[in-house]
Image (cartoon, one colour):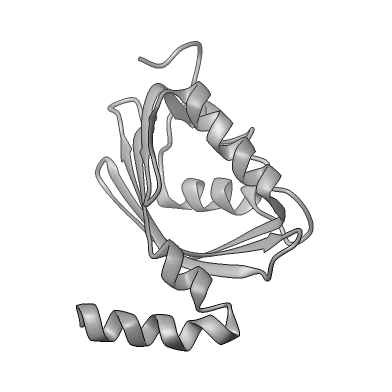
Length: 150
């Protein structure tokens, strides 16, 4: 259940504006303006983890910020149908000691009747996108994937 006087998300334009202000081209992301739109019991899941609750979600965002010297996100497409939002994006993580990596992905947000985010599911190929950015490793990795899976 959401706490306080939170306002829900109302339109695709509002969501795109909020997410576009989160990431920038110089420096660390700032999610503080988006947190009020999450339900206290939000469930977040991606290729690596599944967490529950706003405090664990905030901690996840902080860990991502700490790992990167810079983080960028370009929203390529966004659609909203009832309580479901889909965003297609490219996220570029610029690490302190490693080559930058661009991850191509999609996010599904599920909204409550009040317009708060009750679940967020991020879909992406973490290892493939990272390995594609390592010149000596990309070709053997993709060859392996074709032979074994496709």
